[in-house]
Image (cartoon, rainbow, N blue to C red; front, top):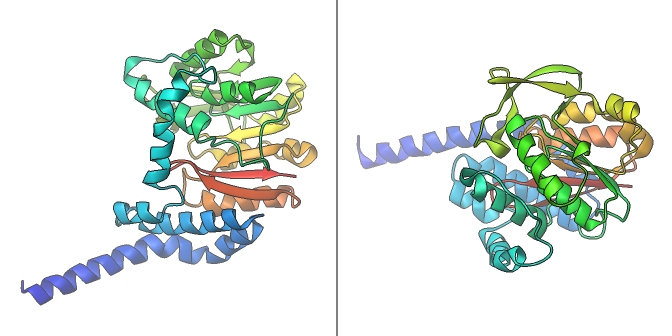
Length: 304
């Protein structure tokens, strides 16, 4: 094959890859435009558009995509530089995990406490006496952060039995009530759920039709009614199951209008279907968004 033929083949391959990667964005461009219009400040509109651009390039040229990510390598370096000071400070909670997951836990602490991923400036933050619900609690970093920010009660949901054991230990070690931790998944329907979980999976645990274990799943509206819980702040980071969990929380959201922080990065379609679902539930919500790591942790924030 000649140089010209090789170049033409490369161009054709790149064009095909770009077309395939751009397809879901092109098909859903009107929904993307709706989401951009829903954002309540210019920074969130820029962040959202930059993340869409990042996602279109991510699987084709990751280094190039990283350059247009709304959270850069330089931003992450600033977080890392604060790590040593943070671990020696009173703000750092007492947390343990297996040796193999210590790196993951450090990453969680940096993202949650230093980058502040579940707060959007003063618009969406944990207030004093907040009733906080942590869906996808993992090792308890978010719950401990919420308590530190002033939450009166934190209800933690974590379906992985391996993560849950660590969660209970960490909550108790920081003198909080582990009876508010529940070894449950949250979703649109109550019942058993196939789930992929094992020691060492931590944040990679997720609902999977071919999962290796079965976990119990609850509908949040029913759970809150049964336990007389009236949340004021809901956080969802549940590895792509956010859409069903939100639908199972419709009554709570429409009636109580709690603050929301919802991960949009687990599935590309969540970038538009989650904001539009929440807007349909409560049209008066004000939306914000921000990224909190270079390649993931893109979060939607909502408040009245």
